[in-house]
Length: 181
Image (cartoon, rainbow, N blue to C red):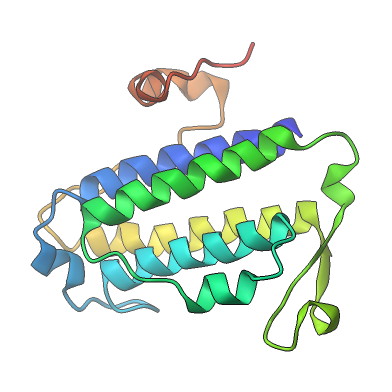
């Protein structure tokens, strides 16, 4: 459980840094066409959040997960997106904090359009691992897009190793977090 919670917290810290930097862009730059899978910062970062909502719904056993996905309303501004992503990240952390031994193997059922009864099933740990990888993948794309603006992309990978804690003191303090012993 410690690893999953550590990853969820690192995820939130990386999102806070990246979205904090993106929020300093004018809206025109947030929506400007760029080269990537989703061709703008707005589209890429909204995709991350929509997928987060879908997977959190699945992890919670919410039968309406397809409606959560289909009903997603994209954030229009980077500031709005940052607030919504922070809320989603807090929910993911709370989910990981609630896990008890054995919960990581609980089977999560998905509705990919044919109903939960006909959808794939995965152990919770695999769903969480996929969710963290998905975030990292698309956050990297957004990071590269940000490099094409006047805003310097922030450091995103110093949240796991204890030896790097000097680089995250301010981030940890802002969230009221302390380092584990």
